[in-house]
Picture (spheres, rainbow, N blue to C red):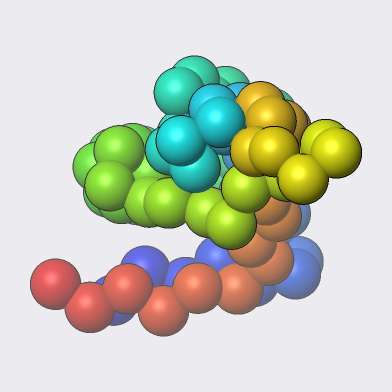
Amino acid sequence: MTYIGKNEGSLDIETYVNANCQVGEYRIISAPEGTKDLIQRMNNLLIFTTFSPAMNMGRPTPSRILLSFSHMDVRG
């Protein structure tokens, strides 16, 4: 089990979501030390993640989403 607690920092990710609701690109803004394995799992997770699209005049439009995780329990 991997823990990210408030005292250790947070995992912050900026994602770019295309008009098809899929993560096209992302970058890790900050990550606590010792989370290399967790970051690899997040990379795999983001590939298959979809979001509700941002809308512009009733049509899906590309957007940016900031994700911040301050505590996570990962079992594996």
